[in-house]
Image: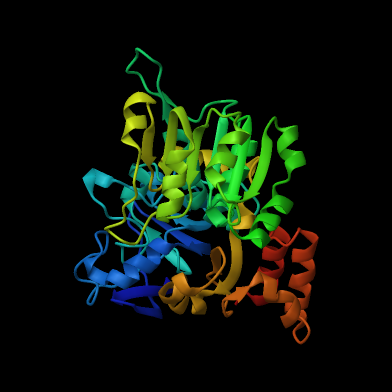
Length: 419
């Protein structure tokens, strides 16, 4: 079976190539990838090359396929797995295999499996670790987003609280409590708002802050105060950029007690320190944002750690259970992470997109691996449509879905552009 894939050979040496996949063994599965969303982790892998902790040392001779947020269909199944999987099944993959303690993961470490490919061979360890996840949804792009959504799910599950006189940690956010999402209207912040409102365990008060009013207004149009109220959540959007004392005003929203749960969505020292300052008694701060710098520091009030039982948690990724929860909620229509997607492109756009990713504005970059198309901002569809009927139709579809990517848009793209 021939495949076309983007492979990593060295530092920022990414090549789109056609090559032969090996015949699958009895304990392997052949699959077709449809979508892959590009993660900043892929940029870090390309930037570091063989120095990356998940990337093999011999990639110059044995390059790896990049991309780990993917969704597709099974083509054929080795005999070992024939009672569990069948051709035509849709799937997503949990890339953090943790197989026998190894850091190896699809999208970083393997020659024959990764998201930026047309066809892949899924190795036995993926199935053995229960990381090949059935997906019963109708849009492939949502299956790709299950991995980043699982990072959000895991963050909520990792929050914890205590009871005076007990050493037991009560996991999860405080149900009906007071929660803040700081710098919270970026792509992952939007996902966190969605989950906070539509999960079965919800805060009573949810305050979302940022300093970009246009992005706040966009978030408020996607996740409305009215919908939050219907789910029992008082939702407040707040621009802290022009406030004289933002901390005081944030605490005032809680009635002066401070927040039970705070998520920090940007690796910015003042935002981290603000999160610490607005915590209430037994408050938990989750540092969600992964900094690029290894010497990133912020101050924390250790008086409050001692006397007010403040906690700090950092999460990086979700586990398999988090991913299954994400898939289940999307299949049921409880979550719609389409708000994360700001750009769409084909396999030919992958290499440069990964290299340039920090400099490209917006949120998630969604790739359709059987398409050839430059990376294009959804906001640019209407302008491009003045000369291209394909983009004109896409612009109309997006407008019908409140500016978001959708199954209708996906179907139009696949029916029009797929080779």
